[in-house]
Length: 118
Image (cartoon, rainbow, N blue to C red; front, side, top):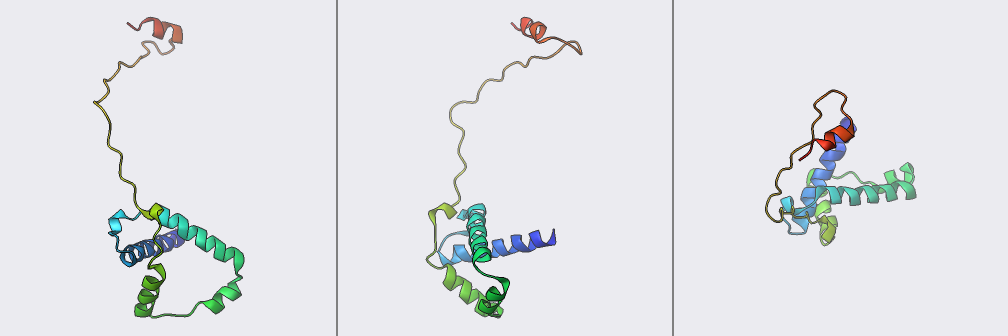
């Protein structure tokens, strides 16, 4: 559970930085689509590099350095699929409610239930 929360927090952080680096409001960025791309990137890294190689590539950064690096890395990487889709509005007038078929006895047959309908 705790690993899931760490990953969630990391995705939220990348979400905010991707929005800022690409001049987008964070509420217009799809976290789910961004997560899918990050997951794909991490899967690729896991397949191509061994943990020893990855450790050699990672350099410890302070908070300010990490912020600058993330902004530089994410700047200009905007994908259209990261845009959150608008919720569809219901079209047309509301549909009239139909009367539901109910059983009168605990063990009614389908034939009897359908025969009772007007």
